[in-house]
Image (cartoon, rainbow, N blue to C red; front, side, top):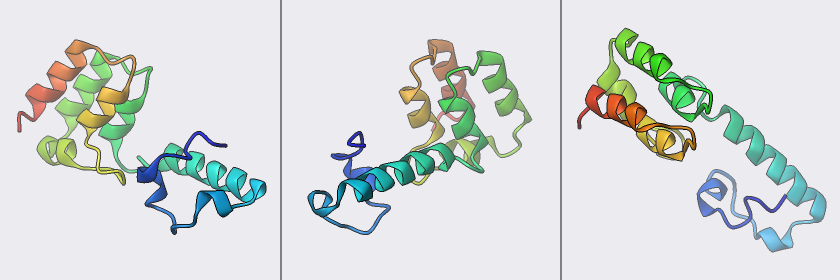
Length: 109
């Protein structure tokens, strides 16, 4: 339950309460809520979802880019943490150089 204890970015989404003043049960509940939020934060952001998925392959990314009529807007959209799909892809441990290249070529801004 302490995985997010020092993460100030995630804490910005909740009312500021001193973490040390919370009971053990409150800390556990807060961590569960944060984990749930992390799992659903990309709802409605398909490019973020595909860039965060460690099972994504290059063809899936390419297909989403090709079939998206507003690719510039899609690639510049930010999630609740202010992250674009490129930021999300950078956090994906299975991302390949080819994935970064196709994303950068799709929206060179």
